[in-house]
Length: 241
Image (cartoon, rainbow, N blue to C red):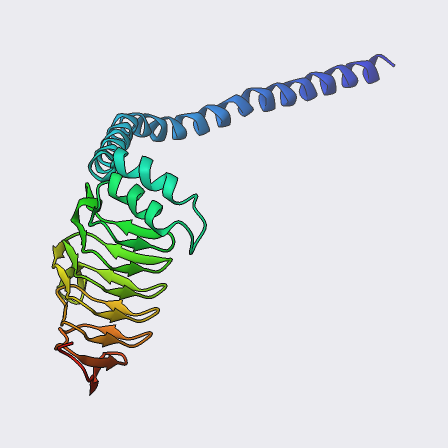
């Protein structure tokens, strides 16, 4: 019995010793993992100020762009004009756009909501003479001046855009710098529904732009243009009356 007790004692000691060695080995592995992670954590700490600086720079850039594009006067008065129903109160709507900065003569009618976009106080670059009627959902891109003569009719969803870009290399075909080119619409012109008038175009006196046409070049007086790209489809009579 004594021999058995001694063997049990020695076995217990060996078991305790084995368990003790395992318990001491585990922290070693943990320490090794922590020591491997430590350089990574130290390397990540210096990056935080740089990331914060980039975020601050980005936010400042966005705030500065908002300051340059926001026109409180136009936002206030044109915001009220958007509450009016289409095809009603055309003269009242024109007056609100006039208060918002647009150069609209007396007798101009805006039959619905008109979309204006462009840098800074773009509303001041829209010049419309008396007798002109503009249908709802017409878009004016006002990076440069758009000048519209007397007795012009512009159909719904037409777009007049004054901004273009230079063509670059294949890695970036559209260069980022905007090239503004004004648009001139002479007296008596009829711009059809959904047509697109591109930068630098002059629509000659009394011409007609067919619905959906894309006009990339100037149009002679008293002509009908249609298609994409728009081409002269005919000459209109009674041009001088």
